Length: 192
Image (cartoon, rainbow, N blue to C red; front, side, top):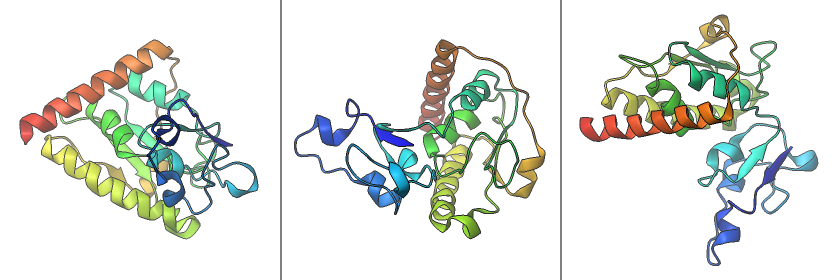
């Protein structure tokens, strides 16, 4: 299920704010305290990617695999939904956003870490997710190339690549995420 954390939601913190990005991103999203709840939610994750304040959370998008990916920048990262890869931790890839993909891709040494997304079934399964991923890939790859890093990889070969699972602490996750974000901003600013 998907829920909005009122502490982070812009609408609850600013009197004149009328943010409706979650509802605009997902045709099934219900705006308000019960966003994406009940029979309306299909676990696409688009509302998570659309929220500028990270106020939307879902119990169907686990953080563990993302934490492990940030911990070891030498290991390639592969995203595939459960429809494409049995045992995948993600029911859908709509939660992927540019910030996350940049942090993962920039955390590798040299030309950057290889980040691959198997979006080959998205257009047939959920066209709105396919459109979101197309726009996200284009902008993220453009920023990576400006920074002299490898662009994102896409396609069916993504399901064949695997990364070893390693446990990681919460502290290490946030340290790696912050470090990768700072490095991304620094490299884009220097390149621009």
